[in-house]
Image 1 (cartoon, rainbow, N blue to C red):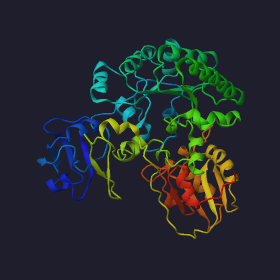
Image 2 (image 1 turned 90 degrees about the horizontal axis):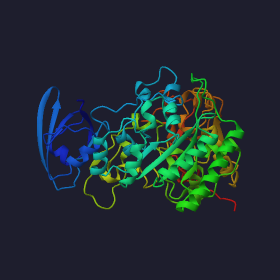
Image 3 (image 1 turned 180 degrees about the horizontal axis):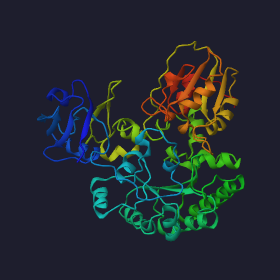
Image 4 (image 1 turned 30 degrees about the vertical axis):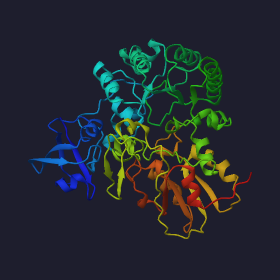
Length: 490
């Protein structure tokens, strides 16, 4: 069994006082091997904790006494200590298959691990889910979970997953919902495969079989230039409009049956179809914000000062791989502190982590701190560097300002190509290409969603860019603060 490595130890913490060092390997807690960060949290919550540590080949034991519920003060290097449960599906639409060669090895790992679904909001197909997994979900309260549905017709789902178990694995979804587990669903729409009447039947199937779902995100297929699947292609404008029409009808059906719209379209669909975004009220608490549902509406509300939530988007498109464990499950702990720990970011002060029950909530507490190197005058013209879709969202907002010193730089994604236009997949190579022709002396604001542990997906660092950039959190509050309080036309 692999073991976790302790990335950092908070100064003055119980772990530091006991003699634990950064770089130590965590072998066991109170004599028991620990499989993941979830078990680690539960087992270190006691007032007496024994840590079996391996250091430079030596086996050491540290006995720690503290108050129950107090943190040890250790940051662990990975959310999963044994092995990530990899995906045995072979979906035509899987984006991992569409990555270019030569990227960081970790980015090519396909997971289908319910633990990462809980911790990071990764979607699982449940094809590798077991009775033991169900018992653990219920015993430890691992909720919410995120499940890929794609189609409720068993044959079509099996075909899409290229897995004979795909048609039957949604039985676990029925059990999860029956046991009161909060589950968010997702449908990736592949033109000509699960759109049209298949999509309409899936909406009906969800209402019939899974009405307890919290919501269902409907997102369009992303196709990079490295796609090798002949059936996979981007939506046409007409197809995007048809999907929205079906969702509108489904929302009306769900409102009449269960009193809430249930089905939500990704913002990208409205951009593709050339239609305005719905009113913010349709998104409720923006629970599917991370999946591109209501992101534009939330951003505008925050920017205009009509919301102070700072929902934002987690930095790093593959943040569970390269961002673990810091931002994937870290959030200020609130309420009952029955189980938690303090983790220290290597570059900053200790931060309080959530209880186990709160781990899956993924930073709902407010905007992250921006990194703003003020190399140039604050009064200089401001350029917002973003992806093609981000530019379409930001341009109407910028147009409402009484400012002629704020502009948008849309970065075409040559690196991935295809129809990839989301800001989270913006890479250093493309940003550098665009900034090379931009004037010096301006302020260039870069959203942190395109970075993972300080680097782009292609491995470039912001320091490698031809112009200095200010890295800001990807939410409306942070942008408003970065450019200065704007005057917004009514």
